[in-house]
Length: 269
Image 1 (cartoon, rainbow, N blue to C red):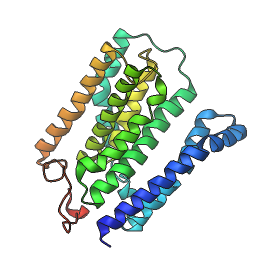
Image 2: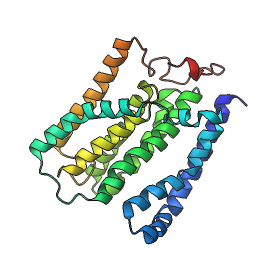
Image 3: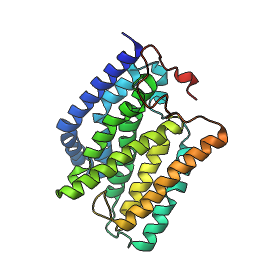
């Protein structure tokens, strides 16, 4: 069995187990911790950590065990990820503060669940594990590596509406967001902190101001969101050009590679 095939099997089995645990036991685990702590946000974070156990085991099984943090992108610069995210999300904070009212109903649980937990665990599980490992460790290429995670990421947000047009809009926005976060993760040398802080700060801007009840938003909210997206793309490309670094997502890595052309992550700089 090739390394690529073995990696795919581990990823599929690990994520399948995570999916089952999350679907069947997440609420029960959270409710139990809620009874012990009386803190919904903390209980949510603990439960997310527990149901993600199969993914942590999968990351340990792929490659060297000493490379666990590297496999999930956790070994890179936190400061670089935070600084880049702050710069890129400035249009949302400035624009929202002008157009929308401050959300007086925001709470600690909102921050813990909708910002910290969503930003960290969704990026770690969907981009670090479900996208990053196939893209780095197999020959699937970018499109196939990103597709499942982006589809799943989009479907997670469908609870936000029951109206068909809104559902389609919510799915499209979050599906494309999943692709963007995966792309920026790859282009920043698989630094998971870049999409984590982007996700957190974008969610925080959405929560701090009375923008919308769902991820779709309206005209003004999307103008400022798209300005942030444009900054993410433009600044990433300019940074890599200035450093003389080749884009990781290119015509050679976009589609599946030929069998036998195993990637060597040590040369994937």
